Amino acid sequence: MDAKIHISSFAQKKASSYGLTGWVSNTSDGKVEGEAQGDEESIQKYLKDLNSGPSPAHVVKVEKSEQDAKAGESSFEVK
Image (cartoon, rainbow, N blue to C red; front, side, top):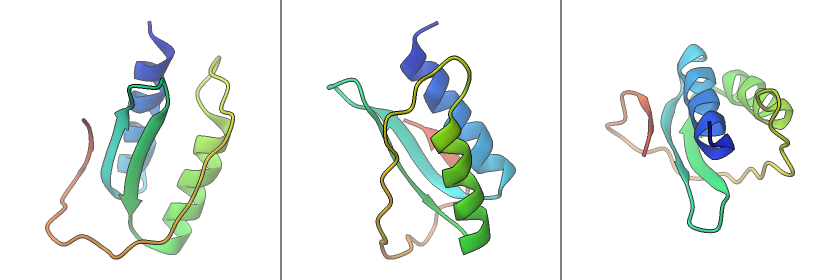
C-alpha cells in the first residue's frame, strides 16, 4: 500500500473520531496536506495523533496555522 494513501486514510479516520470537519489530500511533491476544524481540545488530540502517524509511516513535520472557520462543512474527507 502506498504510504501517502495510508497516512491520508489515517488522518481522515482520526479526524472523524474527534468530530472534526475538513479535508486531507496528497500533494504532487509527495506530501500530505489538509485542513481541520473543531474545538481546540479535539484539534490538539488530532495533531498529537498526526505527529505519531500510523505504523510504519515516518512523519517528519506537522505544521499548524490558524484560519477562519469554514461554514457548511459537515464531514472530514480525503480529496
